[in-house]
Length: 207
Image (spheres, rainbow, N blue to C red):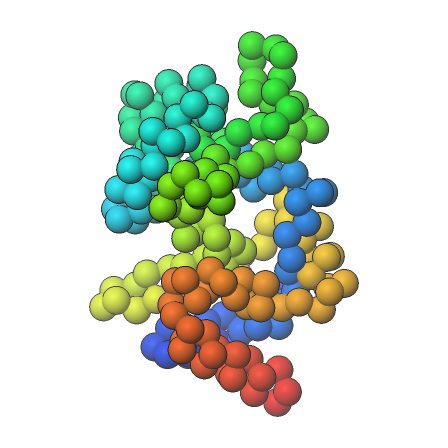
């Protein structure tokens, strides 16, 4: 695969495919599977862990019994093999804050293959019960943030087969990754930075 050019926007390194590739989540098809696939939880900061802990009482009753047990034993986050803080997970894959809307009647799992998954943190926030929505790493996906020495930050577009429907929907809507993620990018880096990103995107895609 050809490596996309790297651009610089406001002191942040940007993989140019964030500007050229298309993406738009298609929940009706993916059913929130990104919350329950993979081998580690979602990356979180210490500040976010504090926000999650503050919101825990409001979402506790919405969590599965398995998730509650994991949180009781190790808390809302742990350090993965790469030394990064990530949200705790159940059965080695699903985030403790993900809950199936179609529970499996068997004792082995919390959902079926047809399960629709929601983030209980985000649902509580949308319902006005908490001040914390969800980790910025979740909101920014499929952009992944990488921190380098000296405070340098890089943003990459992460490709994952479970998001193939999102890619197809993005293409149909002609919606680039950076436009789909306008709100979380502004939340993370600010309005002024995002406007600069849009200008860079315009120049890059028309050159």
